[in-house]
Image (cartoon, rainbow, N blue to C red):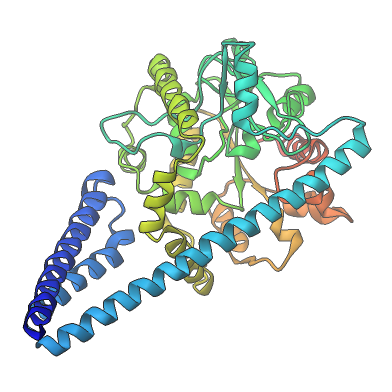
Length: 457
């Protein structure tokens, strides 16, 4: 009997060795694939820790093979107890995060519903984007939704669009009680299409969702207000999710030769994060930074962009309800644990240095606009969190110094608009985190317009 037990234990330990070594090698190969093939080597620094971890596991597997039977037993107990602990933590994060998120969203929505009813006498639209898309799609086939840049595949053999689908009623977002919509232009941007036919463009805008027009309808977005104030043509190249590199690349692709003023709208909330985490790892986007003659010729590829965007939307809709299988995969990968670990490491390491690529992008933008005989203005947009809690102001000062050193006019919306207001949160929907209100967008735009009018170069 003891002999049988002994053989069973030895067999289990052998199986454990094979399993442990196989998992370690597969993890290393998967890391290598993600780093060198999926991201084409542009994101190696992110995967260094995974390389070290997988190599360490392989070494432990080999060491395990030479251990005594007693030490092998201790090793197995240690590994299994560690895994058990990690998955207990994963269960905790999954349950607590979901509950907290659900509570936060529900409480905020309830407050908005109550305030919207009190202010307008109407019911707040509580439908999800998926639900409103389905409802509208049944009535209007010429319909789409906005797509952030991260929606597109990071593939050097594909194209990287900077806009959405063209000539379609586009559903955007809801922060004020109703879903905003606009008819996209020939290139998928938020403009009346006729603006592209004008002989001279007074302003062209680049930026992220604030420039795009979230979450207000025309004529309350920045570009529309500029059209009203100036009574001149304005083109908006802003799009949700954009960062500095995409904004520069969009100018390279779409900047007409007849533009008087280029407005670069910088949002302090996430522009540098978008640059570091999303844009600098793209094999396509990086070419705009390293090769001045590089172009995707996107103007001539709008049909391809429309088809690619349509396919992504269809896929997203089919995956709207996350399957139990996907949830299981995320659980096995310890997704919640890794997210919280990353969040903790980011909180304990204050990043104060501006990426050198950001400075290079501004230099290239200034060179591009000067070559186009256009005036370049840098507009600094503040985030909600600057006025809601303690805010790290270090990047603000650095950005301002960089822009001033490049002799680019700096329009400080924080200083010229928000600091002059007694209730700064009043420019955000229901005083909650989000984009600017209609009044907020108006004040911002009036400030930009008056500054340029009084400082004509």
